[in-house]
Image (cartoon, rainbow, N blue to C red; front, side):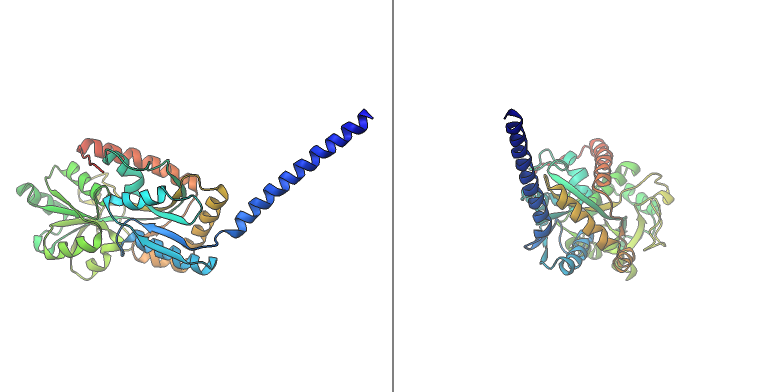
Length: 333
């Protein structure tokens, strides 16, 4: 009797386990098949037209076709990307609200601002690196300089008279200017904008002397002869504009300040969704037609693993933290 009772008990335990395992597996499979069942939002923290906006719209167009749901791009500019990033950080981790991450949001702002409403690393789930682009130093043509040496000479002769613009405080474009000031000893004033849509017209009109911008954004104006390009801020010349020399070639050895962009989700995104989104991103950016289109515009697509993105963010956080500390820059949110 005891043997029969023990066997019955074991049978009940086994049945309970199988039912629980089956329910869990069914729930997991259902989550994989039901996402997405509504519109997906991709938040861009700058005004339309810049590199992060371009990347968001490339993803949106491709995903809308493959997933069969609307994929919307929302521009939420302001405070160096902090407004849009905060929105995503506080959203549900369900795969329906995503962020085009930037070096500014995830590697600069934590050291630059005395307080943020979100943590640049802990409040996000990394999905994939998207692309990078060199920054480019462009000047108003009436300034009369054609290389970096002439600009440095002019800036030293007119301390605090020249101004440099960027697409926002805390962006890699702002930090490019701070690094330039640190390495050359010049005194130039920073004029922040909410995005390139406002800064480039002011550069062309002469309201600001120079501008650090993403190469992909300024390239059409450079080729049209409306602004003078002096240097790219990458260690190597860009294939999109090989005629523009690097900062290092003009005496600023080691000068590197590229902009990079990533896809991020709120923290605690389920691993299955993280994997799905990473796969979708790789499929999109590895398409030959899309890749070639981005390369021509000055963007170098390089989707990768979430782990590789996390390692990059940590390394960049350390690098720009040192630059910010030495510059003494500090801002209030």
